[in-house]
Image (spheres, rainbow, N blue to C red):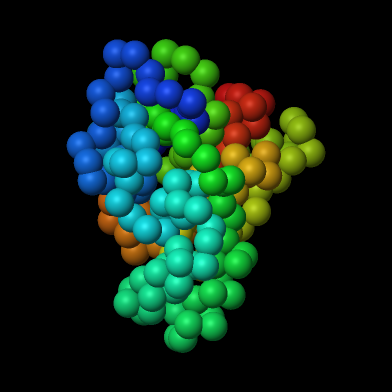
Length: 197
């Protein structure tokens, strides 16, 4: 099982890379990359509504927000509609536009990636972040609401902010990306990850 996944954000599907079996979840695709697969996914290939919103695949209009609030209530991730809408208003997300995501084991990446998601134990996260801080003065934000961990906290946030993120995950991402009980996510824009390689 790979402990580092590279994610690239492209305008169009790459040549020579298999398309994800639709429908898939963003966190499932990270898990498949951990298993050694390189895949791409676009708007028609991601079926998790929260991931679609965080990754900029669905417009942030009232209809989308109402549907997402209902989903969060169904998942028992919000007490009521107001709490759900408050969470969504703070959710890190990419701008709404057409894009393709490529998921690959970092060790197998043949082109530059935009983001590196590492599966680490807390002590390794601390060592990597300490090295990053010593080399660049940068750190990472601890991000977690127990929901949207890979799609928002550890993909959209680092891509939008240019900063790193550490997250214990959420039920879906922990299951789909095969996290063990003592593991967490450390996501860094590729330029920051290279600074500590």
